[in-house]
Length: 260
Image (cartoon, rainbow, N blue to C red; front, side, top):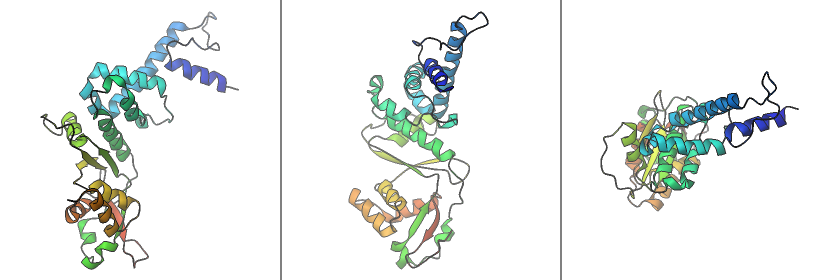
């Protein structure tokens, strides 16, 4: 019985052109126009601030005023679907990609996708990563049959632009400098411990990890990476995979139980 009222209330909150819902009245029986406007503004500003918290580098790139205007339009069109406010904004990168005033910054949606991936990694399930020593006893002849379970926090962001470099410069992890905006970069985002890590993947690295995530053996994943990047370096990528704490268990083709 409350659904129509709740729907009207939610719609009016995010659209300043909508009237105060009929069911809301004040002590004098008049529509509480001013008080509802204050409440509406607080809700919108709260959601915009949630986006500012999740996408700080994106805001730094475009400036506070531009970001607020863009975020406010997003909020009006994309109300929260979850009670968890830290997860708000999953659709924000796609919104930026269609936001005409931001068209001059073609890398901006991917920077936002990287920031969204960092949040997902931060809130992902905890898992103990394998150490280099866990792989030390493997027979080199069996490496090709290796299948790994990737860490639940692992995220891969692919971009036609130098997304890792641009993000790092605007997140305070790297000094500002000239950037070739047409240089592609892929990012590995993970949280093997307490901190979220962002690492630029070498050539073929994203294809390699995505194949491993599909359950392919290492030899097959390496083939997929070579198909994409002829300069794929298996040794370097395998060292990065192990050293970054991106795996939690592995099996070989003749094993029934995973090593974890």
